[in-house]
Image (cartoon, rainbow, N blue to C red; front, side):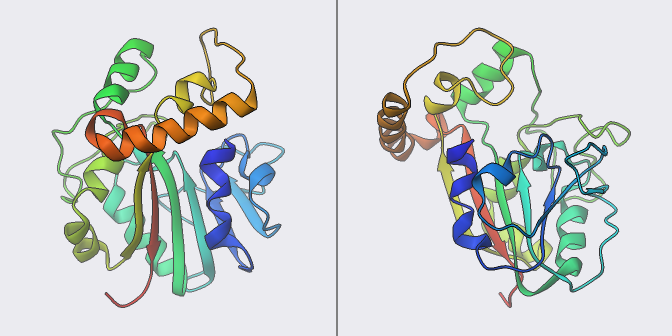
Length: 226
């Protein structure tokens, strides 16, 4: 969680209007320094400030500095519509900060073994007539959506009018060895200092063979002229 959220401070610090979409358990509050974050989700919990449907946001146009999307892009039924809607809500120069899954070879193996969520690369995420997930189930998942969207940067930018200013692959051993986020199997409690060393090994492995090892992807989009 620390690894997934703390990097976002570089883009969120000092911003006045910040929304997290699909905030889930609200972990961002523990790792992001900006106190202006408004946590939203499709279900209203006591820690969720606003109930919001990510595909039908009740937010004023041209009003938001930053949207945070952590592990929610792969749940979207209409990814391109989602980004076009976010662009309308952003102020000029506003940002969308994303952390999500990358379906490398090892991630596909993990998904197969854990039976937690599925994936399919047989859809065209840029075709608005293609439905990427079940429309009536906000927790339906196609874990390949982030990879399909952000591997073709030119096509993404031309379809959304958003500029990709960061597109970084990350996470390998640190994900399963830290216990992940929602662990349903027993894990080993590894000291924090050892996890830090493992994280450094991950950087090398992901750099060397990204399509094999990278389990995560960090993306920042800007609403600027392309």
